[in-house]
Length: 121
Image (cartoon, rainbow, N blue to C red; front, side, top):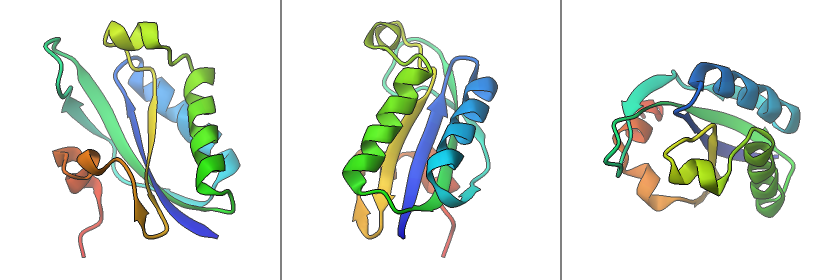
């Protein structure tokens, strides 16, 4: 089993969308736990918007490519489109941050909400 950390974010019907995303993720992952869910301001946007952010910690037998494909599939299933993104609407964003010892989305690791939600040593 591979240990993973996944970042979850939404700025549109966030409570509902995070609930639905967690249900989908729990179908493909094992031993799932979550960080707190926090509200943050959008980064890199001139439009004032707020996100709900959360980290998932879990295990999977999927390869990194299979897991990434499943995350993108969940995003699409939940209504993630490039048109909505251009309008600043993010129904759900699921990013694989860590797969065993391999880190992804390096810029995200520096974001204050990720640092805040990661367990402290």
